[in-house]
Amino acid sequence: MTTDIRVLLADDHSLVRKGFRRLLEDEPGIQVVGEACDGADAVDQARKLRPDVIVMDMSMPGLNGTQATIEILKFLPGVGIVILSMYEEANYVRNALRAGARGYLLKNASDVDLAAAIRSIARGRKVIDERLTHPFEMEPEGESPLTPRERQILQLIAEAKSTREIATLLDLSVNTVAVHRANIMDRLGLHKTAELVMYAVRHGIAQVS
Image (cartoon, rainbow, N blue to C red):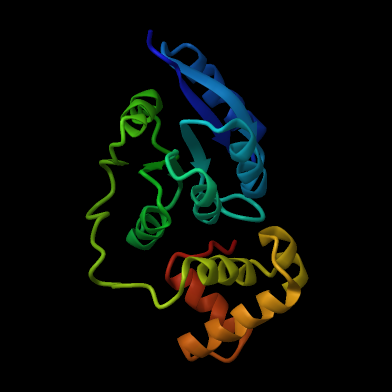
């Protein structure tokens, strides 16, 4: 007997989630088991529902899709995560893959076959949007000087979150966040918050509107 692929949808726009749900409900062998309205909710729902595949929006309040991916894979290492993004730049693709996502699709592409991508990812394959040019080029940026946790904290700093807000989002103490912040500045050779923001945006770690 074939078991359905259990899917969690994570997007901060309810209409988008409903659209994806309707699309996937007509697909045999795929079952939408839940929805999440932001990155932190995606982490909570993944912990509760244990899906096989998560369709994750890149740009969400709180934790973005890449950072939520890092958190989820800590306790659910076998889950397949596909990032949906408006960003075509190689840095964003690299960051998503480095975080552990198995897929990266452009959200504004009307002809993306989401069901096919979900099935491929459930089989352990990687799915990268064909419109992206050279998404696997890791060499120009090389290894990141920051740990995954430091990248999470840098993203939240760039999005103007306070030390206390970051501590709450990542379930850390305020002192631990402060130490991470100091380490980030020291490792990058930066001294001002504005410089941290510029670095995060330039390297695709944060999206600042």
